[in-house]
Amino acid sequence: MNNNSTTLILIASLTVVVLVVVIIIIFSIFQNRKIKFIFEQKAIKQKFDEELIKSQLETQEQTLQNISWELHDNVGQLLSVARMQLNIVQPNLSEEQKKIVQETGDIISKTLQEIRSLSKLLNPEVVKNIGLHESIQMEIDRFNRLKYIKASFEVNGTVTAINQEDEIILFRIIQEFLSNSVKHSKTKIMELKATYTSNFLIINIQDHGIGFNKHSIKKGSGLLNMESRAKLINSKFELKSEKNVGVSLTLTYPIQKTDV
Image (cartoon, rainbow, N blue to C red):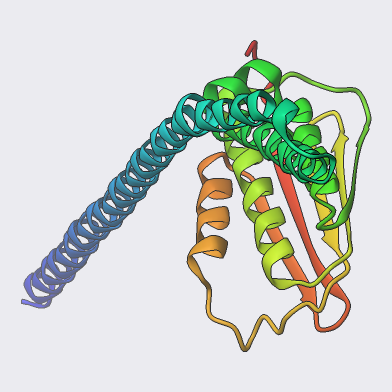
């Protein structure tokens, strides 16, 4: 009788253990599937967000290209015609009028030069062809000619070729920062450095303006655009600001060890 009782207890205990193990296994499988599903959903959302950003950037680049063509083909042509007409009427004017017309012609010539320079930098195909460094230098030269700021650009390390599409994105981030700085910072000096290491291209931009309090300002579309673009090319985006000291931006771009 005692043996039968012991056997029943052992069977019952084993049954309970087996049931517990089965429940644990089923729960573990369910949890793993749940976790996998969550990660898949996150991956899908991330992919969707990246595709959305890419689509927006493509639209923006196409718009910039159209504006570039419009500036070069239409506005540029109109200014060229205006300058020619001034040259035609100039010989028949008095000396004082000639001087005024000459000054006006010079202004038109400078405006035409700036429009041509700007139209190049807005066109993504031109940026692709001339490369990141020359594009940055052209933008720096443009600001210096307009005497908005005193800007400088230097390159350190061994230059490594990077993906052309990524070059355009990096350049647009730099353009956005420079534009915002000129508009809001009241800076007179802008320093830009590109440093190549074995694995990274590190771009640092520093203005010496009024700065801003990062905690008391909402993220505007400009800042969001820069961050979104940096994220798209797997670049680290660091923006630092100190009131009445200035703003600095550091972009750390991972150099791909593939042919570009």
